[in-house]
Image 1: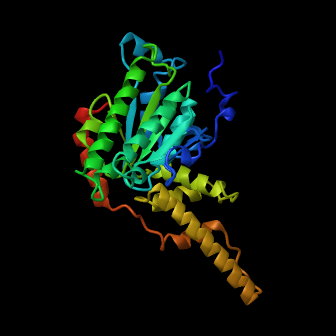
Image 2: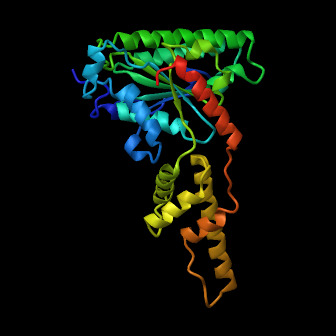
Image 3: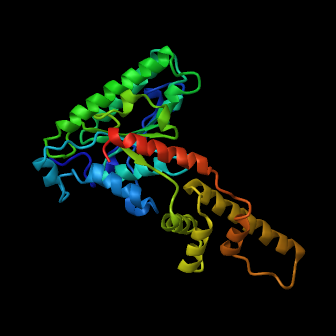
Length: 330
């Protein structure tokens, strides 16, 4: 029988579940068929490599799958993406689902914790039940997983119940993963959990212990190569062209410390500068109008858009990465 997640049938999956089926007051989840994959997502080379090892290598069609069977290794059921804001954790999670050929279900803990005691954990249970009901497997993205421990929620009855529910769901997902035919395949009902946080040090040890969110992947600031790819994609997506690889490489060198979101802000500001300058020239009616382009505008924008992530923040993430290595899959 053809899998409900085969390429020929992916288009039949509902593109979105009405929010009212989960929470009448907030849009806490949506089920989509991802359109992006690792090949369409610029940059993230090191992160893609880690995610490939954790989730794609165990797939039966992968040459490395035999090693998982021989060594009696169970596929990763829970991945924690952590890093500064604006580094692309949500984009990565969606592309990972697309790479695996699985539907993508996203929930926001920050929205769930605004509910009443008893309601938030019910919503978590509903989301995971929906994910398990997808016959060929599903990727559940839990955004802002640290929200349950912040904003005055931490230590409350709501926080305790939410954590307990998340732990129970993670354990269920791990059991399904271990039972996936023993060969790393994506068995019926298997749910892969990808959680994201900007504050990993706030998480309960119960969530990040082995067997739960035990694959910790640092999504840091893009390196020079990644910045070049991100810039190229940002401009190409708008139908514009740059002068060439050398110019892109030069901007990539000048933007050390910029996150993916910062680079997007840079291009957006450059486009606004270009529009304003073109309008000014038209109003002035200059006979010797300067030929302006996106390259010129980006140079102007560089003095206005600065990195949003401080070096001290990066250092804190790197310290946590070193401390967590002894308790996670690497």
